[in-house]
Length: 62
Image 1 (cartoon, helix red, strand yellow):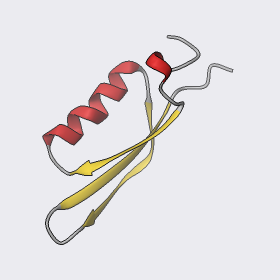
Image 2 (spheres, helix red, strand yellow):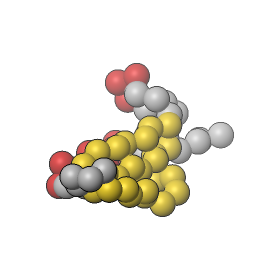
Image 3 (cartoon, one colour):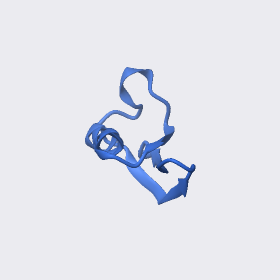
């Protein structure tokens, strides 16, 4: 695994979106790239649907 994330992605990412399969796939894709979860997910209701957020970090090799 590289010291830097692929494709110029940042070391820290905060993924947000509607709580659905597409969001879960986005988080899974980031994990497959080598990111690790940072903290617990957050969830809120916007009056229509649940919106979730998950922070991810690229592991520090230092």
